[in-house]
Length: 105
Image 1 (spheres, helix red, strand yellow):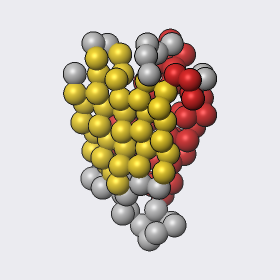
Image 2 (cartoon, rainbow, N blue to C red):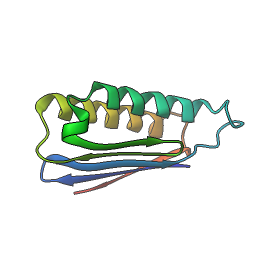
Image 3 (cartoon, rainbow, N blue to C red):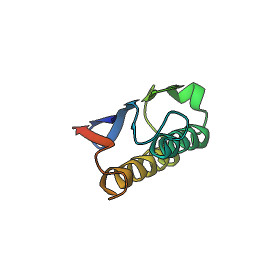
């Protein structure tokens, strides 16, 4: 199962971490893992000055986005869009039970 943990500080995202595997298909053919990887990679590529503003890790079975300070409106929109995409996977009948999301405020 893919586990997503999102921590907020006030209205801002303090961290977003994703770990695990969906195990919804054979290794290399798991479409839920592939979709999650595409979403995470797209978000990382869309961040402005990601190396300066974020600690970003993208590895097999693990991803982490941790802002180093205040987030620009653009980057907040990128992360909010990523969260919405992940929530869509969580509730979709075809992928239900392969991903869980926990939010801490």
